[in-house]
Length: 354
Image (cartoon, rainbow, N blue to C red; front, side, top):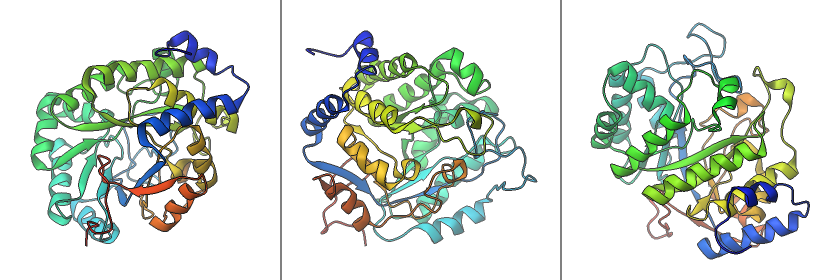
């Protein structure tokens, strides 16, 4: 197939029964962009709360109030202590995402950034707050997205995660996340961040009630924004996990559908440099397999600091991997693991943070 893959061609690729064809095509693109490299970093997550005003039907993480079983809401002092507990010398990123807590205001989130900047070495990137969280801060504070992101950047925020995108199709969103920021708002917030010099990732939640065409439309919308701003560093296909949520009865996508989605993401997103396979979601073995279908990044060490997917039934109930284990995953596919910072700058042994 010559030239850029369009909508019709991308949808047809999902009907391709020979996985080897998709694997070879995606592998070739991966090699053109990243050679034989599989990227990883040393990182930890901060999830300040799981009490959320939104009622997404796919979510196993959310709790209604602080009094619910399994709920947590961290004070600023607890966040400071948590940061000291989870940070390990050599880490280069903290990933901050949680919930839209009905009783937290903008000042709380700005203070989180200040605490992280005080506690962590300057070389550690603060990647924080999904577009949905930013949208809620804007509504509750009556400040514009530009104002909020500018304030966060001044305090030390350098990047946004890609969460909250789910699937862009409006009809699907009405069924799975009816009260959440819509696709237009998600795109607007990431466009604004890119214009301010704040880079970001992008995601897509797949394997639930969406169609293959919905996935392709989602990818094309991301490709259009990347054409405009060039601000996305990576795309992460996020697999819907069915445990402990209102949509549990629909089950989960099979391995063929997962691998096709990774490969077609790599093929369609020709302007996005990296496809990330998030191992706490997929598990180690399936993560390794996706490297043969276009993925070139396996996230990081994580240090048992996220509960979002473990609460949804991921086999990684205590997500933690050493750099050596991550390197072994890459080597099993004939690739070379390379440690990176948040912006895919290579970290050599001589420059690892001490």
